[in-house]
Each structure stands twice: as C-alpha cells, then as structure tokens.
Figure 1: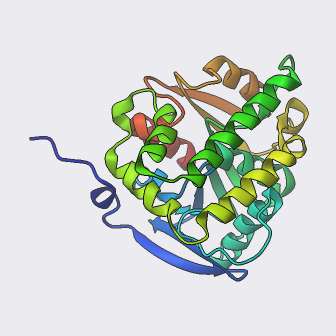
Figure 2 (figure 1 turned 90 degrees about the vertical axis):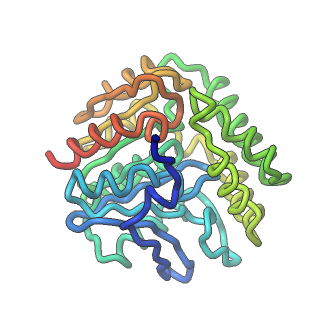
Length: 289
C-alpha cells in the first residue's frame, strides 16, 4: 500500500519557528545545518508551498533550508504598516539578519523569484546563489507592453477575487491553474490556504500588497537589461506546461550572465510540487557545487 503524502509527514524532522523581524512576527519552517537557503513563495502563498522540498533539500544539499512566509502573507503578524514590494525585499534582508545569515542563497517561486532577482541585483554581496522557479515578471524584448499589463492585471484580479470571498470553492478555483495535473492540488492544500486566508487581517494586508505591486509593476518587471545585472550563479527551473512556456524561460536564462535552465517534465507553474523528486535533485546538485 502506497504511503499517503501529507504536509505533516513531509515536514517531520523540520521545525516551525516565529521570529521578530523589525517588529513583524514572521513564521519559518526550517531544517538542516550549514549555509543558509531561503525559499520564497509566490503571491498569496505561504511557506506550506515548500513542504515537499525543505527536508529533502536540507538532507541532500547539506544546507540550512528555510521556507518563510513573505511580508503580509501566511501566518505572519500584520501590523498597521505599508505592504509594498520594497517592504517585502527589505523584510527578507531583515530576516536574514535576525538568523545571522550575512550571505545566503535565494530560491524564489513566481513572485518570490522576482523578489530574489532584485535582491541579487541590489545586494549581490549577500547572495550566494539564486534559483528562479517559474518566476513572474519577465519582460523580454519583443513582448508588447500590453501583454505585460494584461498578465499583471490577471494576477491582481485572481488574487483579489479569492481574498474577498475566501471560501473553499474559491480557493480551490484559484489553486487549480497552478498545476498541470489537477490531482496535484490536494484537498489538504485547499484547506490550509483556506485557513490562512481566513486569518484576521489577511485580506487587508495581502490586498494592500497586491494593489501596491500592480501600481508599481513597471518599476520591478525584469527587463533584459535588469536580468543582465544579476551577477550570481543562477538556476532557472521551469514547468514544461507553465505559461509562459519554456522557450520564454530559455530566452530569459540566456540574458543572465551565469545562468542555466532546467525544465521539469509534466509540470505547470508548480514544478516543485508536481515534479518534486526531479526538482529537489536538480536544485540540491546546484546548491552543492
């Protein structure tokens, strides 16, 4: 009989801990020892998105792996403050300071990849390596500005829709497009995100970020000129069925000076979930070298 994979069984051996990060109570799941790796989820997400990766990566790479809730997200505290992209970037640096990590690797998913890219561009002395997983926000030459605007608007509206009415059905509908195989989205995933979205202040804080991010989108899109400024070794991981497709990822990878691409077969926007064995193996090898 095949064992049932759950969030609980997948995180046995790891620790959940809360940290005071510049006055914001911040939650992280972590395991392992050694050089620090920070895993950053996507917009509207939370650290549980990496539960199938933290323990395997810690064991296979010999690194101290942290998955944390981004500013305003997950089970973090939500003080009365601004929630902008700049605040989110600074929150990661402040978190690293709290855990004593002067230098660290960033593994970013979607929005998390955009955050990681800007950390590498602005603070290269603090970033060891960078992994961009189906990163959101590329604006490559030949891509019309209108297409970028449409993409950002779609992300904004889909997140605000579920935040305003965070029912189980609404959460299920929001998560379904993130996987190529619908069976990859378990009812446990739906239930956990439903619980997170129904926490006091969740709608207000995440919506505040979503609105601000959309307004300032052109300040942060990753143009080819900006991608060329990423100086650290970079691994781009893409889902075979992600939108935009792997060819788009190849074009982005070619612009980053020290980058290589890996495409996870059979997966969509969440290769770390749908193809986690391949994802963890390839990423661990990258972290060890």
